[in-house]
Image (cartoon, rainbow, N blue to C red; front, side, top):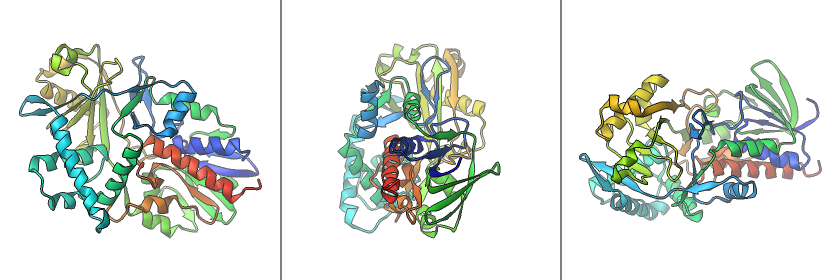
Length: 425
């Protein structure tokens, strides 16, 4: 390929969005993706005839980046009906009161907004709240943000909560046919070249010129490069920059990739709804030592229960293979539902999991900011000499990091920056 305007590294939703916008503006674009597929951390399994998400699953709130695409292109969304139970001392109770008490803890963070940044754990240590509520708040931050409560920035949590409020973040949606059709939609609009199984390991650059190196020994030249590789890949130094980018390195030291292990158990039917307590259930929160959070496919009719382990819960599974982690999830669910494991296994059709930490092209689930790093995503996003550009959920500046809509917005932002850098092309 000769005379390229832009080389995009990474075919997740950020890279696909930028490629779509740039090619629509007449730019000559080459997209390089290391995997054998597009979509990045969107990965949908259809083995049972219905979608089972192994990566991104929910649409958080009403983000225009996703709702606009869904509405315009006939991708139906289904809104969750909140019905959350909490298991305590083998009893099931409505979680509304516990969640409300936890919300009051998060409201106290606003007082800390003008103070020096601190970790969420430090924040909790200095506020007046019942110990059980603090523990619920810790579990939520570790679960939802996939973050270490002793390291995540309170200022970043305030920014995230504000961003959610602006898009009705208390509402949650699912794509009825899974996230994969969104990836296919973005890919179908590309008027650019795409090369799969092409891993980038180096970028030599000077103002107005880049040379991209791949592990198979090929080199590509262009005027600009857009890097959308996940934070974990960049932090690992898997892509070498010459000259180096010290400001980016400093920013990345204030960001971290969260750890998650999720297991989706697919059953022959929704047997749990035979118990009236579980009819219409969306989430159930437990004290299970392996998988504290579970959810159903609500409001969709699929017979799936998903186990979620984040942070230190996920770390415990780092040396466990796929079959073993599915077995652990079955054992946990049997204990939670007070069923015999053999009885539960008779209901089980199959199970699915994916280790994003072990994937060399993600090296983690999604990003969060460490203490002092609430603006680090903005630094990571900043263009370099009008030549190198950056996108992906970790580059979000508005509190939407860790989300698909944040990744899409970053791709749109980077495309505008590239067009502004070379408006006459």
